[in-house]
Image (tube, rainbow, N blue to C red):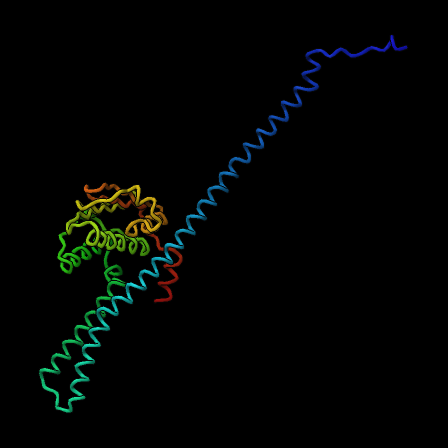
Length: 281
């Protein structure tokens, strides 16, 4: 009986259909699944990276807000509080003396109070420059440079290549204005020079701001590795990126610093700005 049993011959074709082909299909399915997972994995990684960037931006915003609070407190203490204190002291001396105030004394007190009023107005202007509500960004930066030169005895040169009005949305306008103010402050405090060139230009899609000095310069690699960004440059770069723009830093020790800010033109107001304008109106 056993001699009559026929054993099927395992031909190469049979072996390929039985073993190799299923294995190949399994590999193809795995590869296909892997390819399908790649976009998801890449998207998840991108979201994680963006979340981390937003977290860092939030931390820097909180840090910058605290710095601003301390700066305002210092300004109030060093200027307005001391000026008013001087006026109170003069009035107290007159009161305690029991004599009739002289005209000269009253004039001195009046001058002190007028100085306090000027300091309050100056602080208000720095906190919320009204020029940003009345003029375009190119005019506002021009006024800022002129005021800085007059008050700080600097020689900042401003070149405006913008001919037609650009109605930027308020958020971007404020950001660019603050950027110029911060960069000019950094030059005065850290660059060892009181000269710089500020150039504002525009293309069909972008607005470009350049600030260049021939001061002491800096090591850009060290600045990139600093979490505070070196003079607030990291925080400024994060704010510019939030508008889809870039901040480029070119510098070297002893060779000055050239900073270029490029950001897309944004003329439409955000929903937040529209809501704020509605409430203010």
